[in-house]
Length: 199
Picture 1 (cartoon, rainbow, N blue to C red):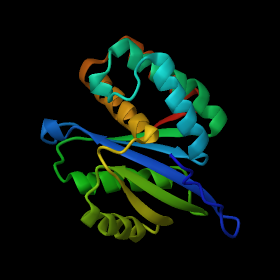
Picture 2 (cartoon, one colour):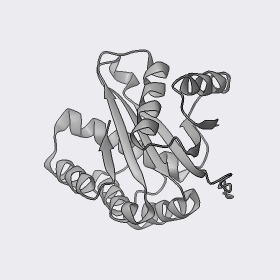
Picture 3 (tube, rainbow, N blue to C red):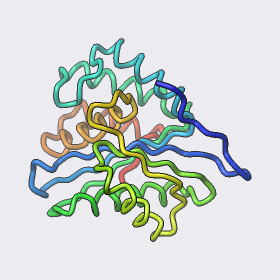
Picture 4 (cartoon, rainbow, N blue to C red):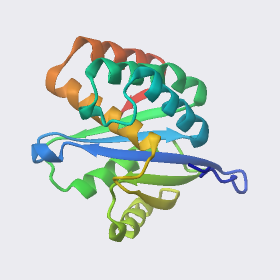
């Protein structure tokens, strides 16, 4: 995959947000919006592809991969994320079935938390319908957020950073449902490193 990194203009840095969701199958009981925020998408993409291979997770989604392999993958990402100034952010919604509005809320909270007012923000959303791109951009700009573009990532598109967002959403969902000690330890480590942020 080619580079999607563009030079910043007038001292404004570019920040890419890769967004995935989880929980539509719970009919609103638990809906999770996961956001991967990164300035150097190309470097993180290469690392994630390497971690997918070394962990054995490969390109499988979180729910489809063996548990030990997906945890090894996520652990490897977390250990390197701080050095790349990568942030993994997530919002958890309960009793909401307005999934688009909740997703926009999650993205907005991530941008506000990261204080990206002096940035060009590009938002990549997994499986977003083409007809909704304009509405997402308009709604995010209503918050006064510096969103330059909202990009649809097709469900069949080969994007390692969307797979990372999928892994984060899946891990959060697993932790909420099962409260497993190994994930709790991993999340605690990620928070201590300043990598993981609950919104």
